[in-house]
Image 1 (cartoon, rainbow over the protein chains, first blue to last red):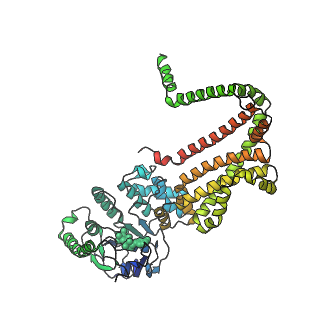
Image 2: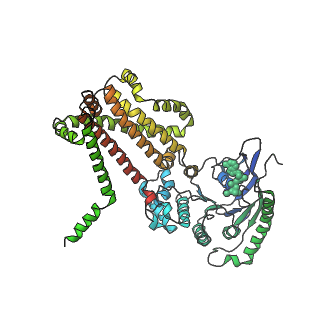
Image 3: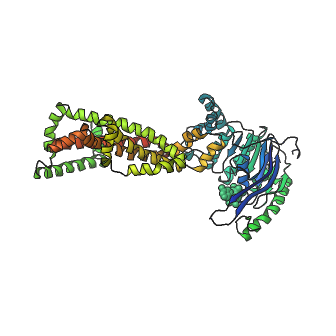
Length: 280
Length: 262
Ligand SMILES: Nc1ncnc2c1ncn2[C@@H]1O[C@H](COP(=O)(O)OP(=O)(O)O)[C@@H](O)[C@H]1O
Ligand SMILES: [Mg+2]
């Protein structure tokens, strides 16, 4: 659907590697979470990221968000290297990351208040986005009074409240029941379509990866490297017809599954532990 | 017509939460009275003799004046301790090095009986308000600072990261995440600190400058006026109870978000 070689990428991941000291003491070596990841993400692109668990999906997202520094390589946004977090690259967390002592409204207002927006303006913006996710009536509730799906809607409203160019989403619907998840996928597509926002969306759900994506990034098992980048050329908007029934959808899904399957089978027979530098 | 309100009042009176404490108080006073009458009057006073002393204590203004002196030092010292304790606690919780530097001294002081340090306090502050304030302040402040620091260190790292991801600086992270997350710790510190402050004010008034309720207690004990002495004890106990009850109410207010109905 998109030109695979746009003039200027929104995000460029340039030779990124990340190692972690293996826990438990001793000289067990390092966990290689990511190794030499190169990736260009176009402005306005919806990129989904999939791969076996522990392959470094979260680590990649955290590096793009500047929540972790890479051990090698760098991340460029609009051509400039980034080194500190910014609401321009808003995160949506798998466990929602809502402040339990703040009301829904205060949670959504938080990034605006951090930016020193006047209270009345912050309130207005927060209410606008709560409206967009259908939670205006719950502005004065606390997070624990809401269902998981509603809590993640708050997380989404909070991320969108500062009108970021980039949305980084780490398995945002992973903790939400299957039916609500389908609704949320549709809501997310409606919010994103035409917004021009660049989305990096990590998931472990193949259907979700194909359904949402302009391109699917498949990471190899640990250490994570780019295994495949598969364009998804299905017509948009995808919510007013049954995408999953299209031959195009099932083909891509089957291709991804056959590649992913090898790594999963390997992981099953070799245990979940990632490859270590010492073991190779 | 009047049967319903009467029944309602009867039901209220019949509530165990109301009559159980009342019953226990009556039994307590009865036992006290019995014991008080059977012991040497120089050693102990029954409630009846205490009641007899009360008009004199009140009309002379002696009890009110003593209570005023005690409350003044207690309130000022405790408020100072609360504010500086929370601030110091945040600092210690944030900078481990500071905690390691100050920790031994704070714990050392905290576990030293204050009476032992009274001579030193006299040397530093003289016999007077400053010294008494110091005895209220320091130990209360240490209790509040160390528990607050524990709370800050126990903050949820995932929420700290959320704040960081939205570009929050240190001050904003403290204000929005660390401090609200530490409220249960801070409150338990305030409670321990309140107890320390009450003991501190009495020690100061008994051993540093004979004044206030502690002074009244000390004086009447020396002149063997046990009824007057016990009145001082009662008022000190009431002050402590009011303080703790107030903190309980504060805790209910601050953690109300947990209890809200869905
Ligand atoms: N803070 C950390 N300390 C040590 N090891 C880590 C840390 N974060 C991630 N890892 C390791 O790096 C690898 C990749 O983790 P992660 O990015 O969370 O994978 P994914 O999100 O794909 O499941 C895993 O082996 C994990 O154990
Ligand atoms: Mg992950």
